Length: 199
Image 1 (tube, rainbow, N blue to C red):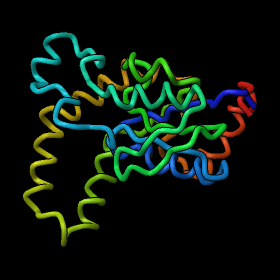
Image 2: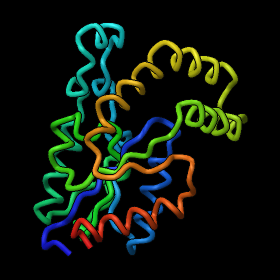
Image 3: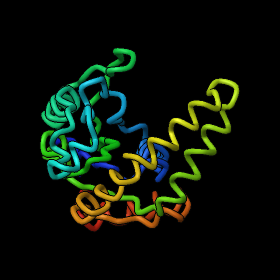
């Protein structure tokens, strides 16, 4: 095990299993600290106009998450940080799992990733899983919200995911089959981390 914390990034499209794998790995590795990109998101995180973002070259560095970058750097130095959700302490455990959808294509956060796992999930599978999540919360989420999501998916989300596959997946250290079980993902990830010298 490395002396300093090792930060493992988990990337993939929406509905691809990033959160599921991040939580599963944390549990498997004795409650390792987890960080989630979306927990740090605010109204300045994403491009205001995705059409313009595509026209300008689809640079993922335009996405802003300065506090996540700061927290990753701090954890890597062995310091604890505060959760952006509830202010609780996030400790520098030997392994830290970060849901990092932008991978190494986002320099500010990606520079702190020691290892990147990409879950390669077909877009239609990711979309189906997301719709099922909406359906499972039908009492809290109105039908109009699902309609809005699908319209956004067609207009900007899907093209963004295609860019993600193009730009982010090639930089991954490990690519997992998104249609396999989470148990298989964990077994494969652990084996590959051992080969890479992180365990």
